Amino acid sequence: MRIDIITVIPELLESPLSHSIMKRARDKGLLEVHLHHLRQWAVNEYGQVDDYQYGGGAGMVMMPEPLAKAIEALSQNTQYDEIIYMTPDGATFNQATANQLSMKQNLLIICGHYKGIDQRIRDHFVTREISIGDYVLSGGELAAAIVVDAIGRLLPGVLNDETSALFDSFQDNLLAPPVYTRPADFRGWKVPDILLSGDLKKIEEWRYEQAVQRTTERKPDLLKD
Image 1 (cartoon, rainbow, N blue to C red):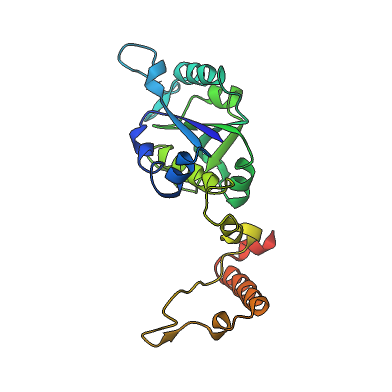
Image 2 (image 1 turned 180 degrees about the vertical axis):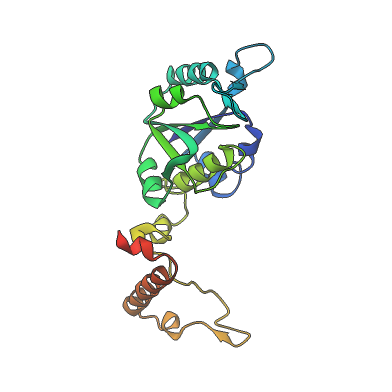
């Protein structure tokens, strides 16, 4: 998979995408992530990519010309399955969306900044708009890093145990059950006997019951789906 990201602050993305599972994915050649500084396509020698908004109001808006040039230049070499804009008013990102996007080959992500991007770019280039929650960040870079991480770990061969992702929270609309490791008795706090029984069928039944109970208590809205 290839993911291109257009940003005015590429430094914010370099560290999150250069460690742990994302580093492993890139080192294995399973995921390519390319950062593109929007100021390469600035409208003048000063690197301008934003301007005042029509109609007045506080805050600057990312201009259409640099973004259009960036998207068109990158599209000359790559055919994108989705051009994604990270924005607070987009569809809320969830595991189902991560699953869908992990099946794509090429993605282009636009990181908003300031008061956002000119609406004409959204109307004529963007194919999907994504939000990571009902709050506002300083820019779309951290949100983009979250999306890339959630997608990247699902790619076949990235995780050491490929079945691991299938049992994450939100797969099948359930939260993951409680997990335990050694020692079996820590300060008198013991691991449930069922997990030490060796009876795999009963263990799976227990885990399912715990997942349903946890989901009911903490995120009952997931059960509606």
